[in-house]
Length: 297
Image (cartoon, rainbow, N blue to C red):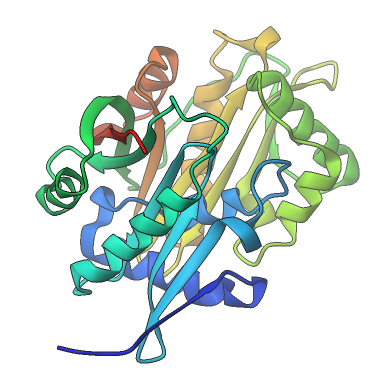
């Protein structure tokens, strides 16, 4: 089958089409898809290192968005291809990513991930000279069934959705005190809140008795697949090991069910033992493991 291929850098007007592509790929691969729409929207938040209009490229066939490449730099990227599309597009997308590699770090290999049993992608990567490296991430999945999960908070603590300026400040505080390298600011979060898939009722904070923020999580919902994603989830360092994370995730599951979700996923680095224990305690099961595949350019 032959068709004309056109390509262009991402623009903000293309958000609905990228959303549809990721959702279509999810419908085909589900828990073994490389991205949920939540990963895409989370990546669109303002960042000093990542610029969507510079670091995302799109490929079209017959006026249909068929592939996109996401350079999350400085030495890694991701590709999503519409099911049924030829290998040519996947190779073109990977070639573009390789041109984005940070040439200021020539000794650093470029990295693209592959789910362990994805023979199609691993064959393409092998032919391109990539070699399998370390385990990168684990993806966890669970069905959402009534009644929702129940988790008890310590006395005086509560979980609620973001609904005021003070709540936005609290959510940012939770993000910055949960992740050492977080660049979250009020402006960053407000930009995130303006994205079309953001739902304030799915952006949660845990609040301590004295009003301080103990943790937070943001959930994303793919209506077409009735699939939710937790991205990100964090407990402020001062409140860890108190059951805060479990309570936030449990509340997120109930809220996802309320908007129509029948399943949810969450992903974490393979070295984050505490996060993996948390998700298992919330009823999630390991659904996919991906390795980093690397290539010296």
